[in-house]
Picture 1 (tube, rainbow, N blue to C red):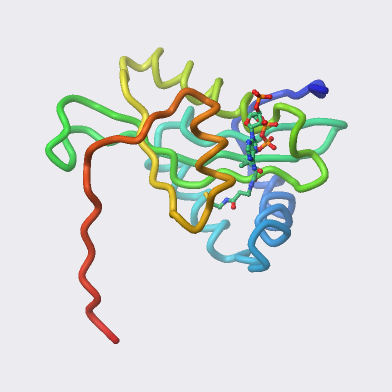
Picture 2: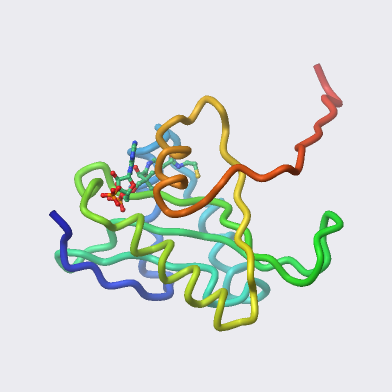
Length: 149
Ligand SMILES: CC(C)(COP(=O)(O)OP(=O)(O)OC[C@H]1O[C@@H](n2cnc3c(N)ncnc32)[C@H](O)[C@@H]1OP(=O)(O)O)[C@@H](O)C(=O)NCCC(=O)NCCS
């Protein structure tokens, strides 16, 4: 069943909740990373591309992304979803879907027609989630070069 979820832009006071959710999801607490990420979001990234979800008067999820213009040979401006996380106790209540819905609405308001993200083949959950949100597998190939082995 869906919970009452409120989506808004994050503020510095949300940092502990964001760090906590990520630690629950990945086992890694990145306090310094998120402090810097938040500063970048405020200074460089479009405001609409960073969102938190509130339910029961607490932050229970987040999505952080950006907009890129004429990058990777793609025409125009596209939006990128870089990281999404929902508190394990609040999964399956539509929190992730609402975060992406607001992200997509804001991107559209800014003239963006396509949203990209990358999904690791090791992360079947995230893949299913994005498929459910109307994402389809694209045709671009990701390349990498290992520079230190
Ligand atoms: C993936 C994630 C964001 C989904 O959040 P959520 O709030 O539970 O998702 P929702 O409740 O909004 O689900 C929306 C839809 O996706 C589906 N879905 C969500 N997680 C799913 C999963 N693991 N497997 C299959 N389907 C899934 C839901 O069933 C729902 O479908 P419906 O619309 O038919 O009901 C959340 O599970 C999460 O934070 N996972 C860990 C994140 C992570 O590892 N991030 C690091 C990489 S960026």
